[in-house]
Structures are given as C-alpha cells and as structure tokens.
Length: 376
Image (cartoon, rainbow, N blue to C red; front, side):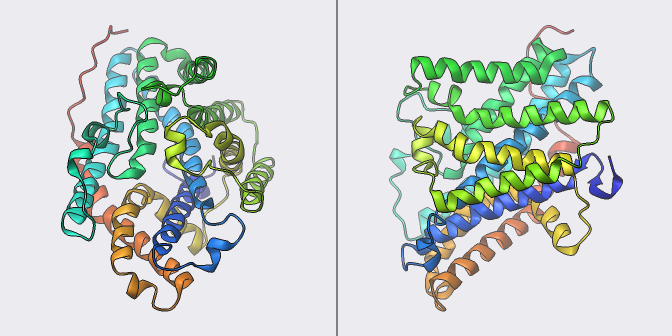
C-alpha cells in the first residue's frame, strides 16, 4: 500500500468519501430547512431536493468495510483471547458512538426546551433515544436526535460482529455476511412489518454486507499482491454516475427515513443507492488515489470530522431555521449554501473541541464492557 495515499493504516480516499457523504446529508437538510420559508430553485431541479440522503448509504457501505477490517485485526492480535478481543472491540465501538451522541441529544433537548418549538416530552420514546434500541412496538419511533435512526442499524451491525468474533472468529467477515443475508431473506419471507424484525431483518443492512465484501476482496488482493488500481477508477466512476443518475430518474420514497424504519422501500433504496454506493466505495478503495492537493486534504480532514458533522446537522439546522431571516436575506439558494456552511463549521468545531478530546479520554483509557463468554 502506497504511503502517499495512506496515513497509518487509513485509506485517505475513503476518508474523503466520508466527507462527501456527510456534505450530501448536510445539503439535503439545508434544503429542507429553507422550505419552511422559501422555495429555492434547486429544490425544483428534477429530484435534487432529497438526493443528499444517499450520503447515508455511502456511510453504511464504508462502515461495513472499515469496521469489519477493524474486527478482523482485533481478532488476529488476540487469537488466544477472542472474548477479550470482542470486549475491546465492542467497548471501542460504544465509546465511539454514544458519548458525542448523548451530548448532542442534550443540546437538541435544550434547543427545543428554550427555542421556538413546543415538544410534548411525554410522547418522546426515551429508550430508542438514549440507547439506540429498536422499539418494542410497530411502528417504531426514531430518536429525538432523529439522524440517530441510522445509528440503530450501526449498533445492530456492531453487535452481530461482536457475537461472531466470540463464536466463529476464523471466518468472521464471511459468517457476518451470511448471517445478515440470511436474516434479510427470512424477513422477506415472513414479513418484517413488526417490532424488532423491522430492524434485524431490514434489507438496508445489506449495505453493511456490501462493505464487508469489499473488505474481503481487498484483503485477498493485498495478501496475494494483486494490483487493483486499474479497475478502481472505473468502479468509482460507474458508482458515481449511477448515483447521480437518480437525480434525473428519481428514487421514489427511498429517501424517507420513516418509510425505511417502517420496512417499506428498503429494497428500492438498496437498489438505487446501495449498489451504486458499493461500487463507488469499492472503486475508491481499490484505486486509493494520492490525496496531495489542498482540496483533497481538506476532504480528508472533513472525513475525520464526518461523525460530528453528521450529528451536528440537526441542532445546527434548528439554528438556521430560527435565524432564517439572516441566512436567507440574499435569496433561498444562497440561504441553503450559507446554512450548509454553518452546519459544517459547527460540526468541525464539535470535532475539534468535543469529539477528539472524548476519543482521547475513552480510547486511551477505558474499562472494557463485560462480555461473558468461553475463552478460546
């Protein structure tokens, strides 16, 4: 692997792709924020208005690729103590996700408590909000910080990986792929429109499988010294074109989180956005271009900050809506641009002053979460 395009063990091109995914999510929410007050021209440009939701599908594929490889390395380093490896892996995933998520949930609570919205707190489902657990009822409710609905699927993926690390560590990624695919197949046969199953058997989890599969192919190519750089740009280009094509062809209701959380249109989303996202991610992984230019290095930095940018989108969007008279004074489309820039800046500040210090605290010193299992 060329040192020019990596930093430590990271693929910098994948970090840049994470930045693009976060920016797409920010942009779609900036358009949504403007629609309360004006009608930007871009919202009428074919199906551009909700296109940015596909950033989440890119995130899922990247997560499947990166997290599965992290799990494999964790097992390889602790072959004699697989339960210890699983504890460490799960602890690091939980401390990566929850502290910042809880802080920004509290920020949103304070915004809504003292802001322009009256929230019926008795109707808030606190279990999925605080612990990212699927609802015991159908239809389930999204967390108060509603981009957290995607983290429910992330946590499900992490838990499956953790369990398989303990029981089938030698075929970790393959077994994870088989298990998730089997769950989706069973769900398709029995129906997933019921509590818990709507998360556990939702076809959207196949996007993690895509990422895991990319990791398997990439690891095999690295092990055997096969060069993949020639096919990488073609895969990335095909994936990007297929994604962009949906701006003109449409994507039905695949962009709506409520429909996905209810178990509808998930197959459509996997087809129109999941498969192209997998091709795009695979292409960037296999290509692994040098990230030397200033724009490329900026994208890598924003990729590092992508989790903060993603979660800060909703609290920052509330500020944009509250002060829309300032953001939109030069027109709705300029307002969308300024709103997106504000969300990105808030996310970067959050990354620098909250997320990074939290990671130094939790990942340099933490107590592993107990996970009872039989040692190897």
